[in-house]
Image (cartoon, rainbow, N blue to C red; front, side, top):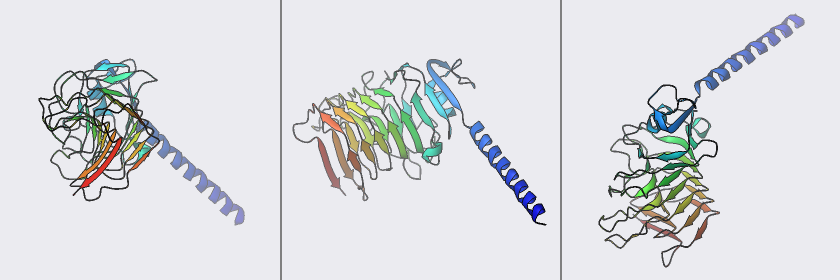
Amino acid sequence: MRPFLLVLKESNLKITFLILFLLLANSTAQAATRFAAVNGSINTVCSIGVPCELIHAIEQTGPGDILEIRGGIYNKRLNSNTVAFKSGTSYDNAPIFRAYNGETVIIKPTATGGAILNLATSAASPNLQYQIWQDIIFDGSGGIFAGQGPTDGDSNVAVGFGNGGVSGPDAHHIRMIRITSRNNQSGNPKIISAVGNGFQMGDGGFNENLQCVAHDNGNFIDPDGKAGYGIYLGGSNNIIDGCRIYNNGGYAIHQFGSGVSNFNNNVLKNNTIYDKRHPRHAVHGQHRP
């Protein structure tokens, strides 16, 4: 009986390996690499030869997928209140949005509006979580902000601020790698409370800003006497690591918990701050319940 049992075990082992192989192959097959380009179109291919329009490509990019964005200047605002972003369940299957192969990607809208990239839970993008953004420049020099308030209004890149009037946690576990936010001039003196931040990281929490660059933001003073910050940090459990922050009108990093009861556990490390225009603080922290 022993030889028979041994053969049976070997057979079961082979079947187990076959099942695992098929499951892994199926998982790999479901992930896709898509391409977007300035001259892309609305199509179902989104290949390097037949690229998609940027927003259309974003809405097709799901868990485990990669969106390769070709070089160029995109006249777009990417707002989760109107764009249907998809999410992952962990960083292992997070959708990745990145510049293709070292090409220079600049998102620079010319029309008046809110944040250039606004990632907040909304009816269009429910339960927004687990995304990765890499090597993209968000440039605010093309258009004046509308001063729409804390949901997205005065920062080039806003993550986890405001939930679009829907229930559920705000955007969390968004990882930004080598993202540049520059030239936010929303602090036009005619616009109250639009001070022109580079980045805004809100109360969704657990977001990461790694090796970022924030420069030349918020160089106007608004009627309330405020200028924009390199990074406005308003939530908990966030990481800002290895960023270069310079030539901003207000503090380089402003930690401010207004009405947030759990404002804590943020990690700021390895950041380089210089040529700041605010006369006192490079990094400023305050909590106001």
